[in-house]
Length: 86
Length: 383
Image (tube, rainbow over all chains, first blue to last red; front, top):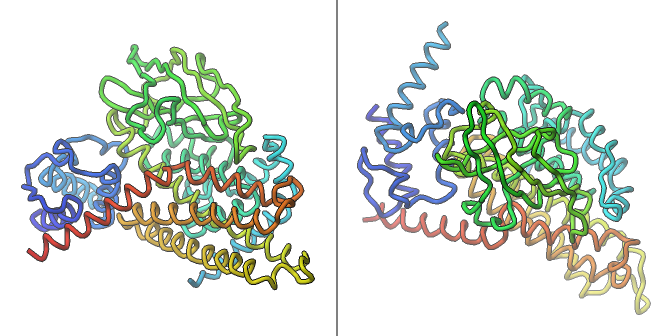
């Protein structure tokens, strides 16, 4: 999970340049992201962690912080592995 | 830019179709402000209305470059036909990306096969570039939502079967699937537009339109940030390629015209000031196409930068198409101002492209802010 957080920190640094984001900071509530950011984040998560974000994942609690996204990635990865084994 | 064998094969098929079925009729459709149903049927029978959907969902299974090539060739023939592909693809891709399993089961194959036509209903009389200001309301009522509001400038709404309608709810902005026959939905045609006049535009009046909660796409609050954003990204990409098509059409018609029209005892193509305009057309078309290829390849790779690169491609392609179309009219002189030649249609259609799917000014803000962010990022790393 720490590796995922590291990647997320690097991605966020590119989009929220000049600010330090702690793992528990509320990214969207802070209001310093562009209108394109939400979908760029979805594409980043899908490409870098080999997961598919769909209808069922659209909850703010999944994307609101680095911690929340790391949990989402873990959950989706485990789910995907279980799915492929079944 | 080298195309794969399959991309080349498809481009040839798209081009032949456009030359045979679209180019000869586009001026007449523009004058009549109508798209014959037969054209929609032909696109559906080719499977091209499912261009953005995977084959196992009833789509054509094209990659994004192939989808782009289709937009270029249809756009070269008629921007109204291309705009059908644009809005239908926006609806289809949204369904595939964000639809529930039940929504997908009901609609994906129909959209992919062109048995149902989709449209995108975001814009309102008071909410254009600032989509956050939409006033259409969705009020929960038992197992339904009641939608009330007014949508304007909705492309192909005159014939669409399914609308992706954006509305404000107590829990934030939402996207809904609204079927054409829903009680309370009144559709009024819009005529007399400057360009893309055969795109069957209409207004939607929603009066206590009862829509089941299961028709909600995505979750409340995600309507703009995810649903509209991903659909508009697809729309911008489609329009960008369509602009390459307009520019290519201008170039081709000018090459033909300047090769037979004589003034001052010489063919127009031998006049240096005409050559300057032609050179700018050649370079502009190639540059716009390369930016579109770049965006398409990034999309196929699932790269997050594909979104900003799509904005850049759209901005460059539509401003280039507008300049090229203006020069095409100039080269044709009075002929270019008449309905006997296609140049004036290209000119009018190109202007529309500078407004839709994010105006030039919105793209400029987006592109500049992104560039500033990159600079700030480099500075932060250097510290």
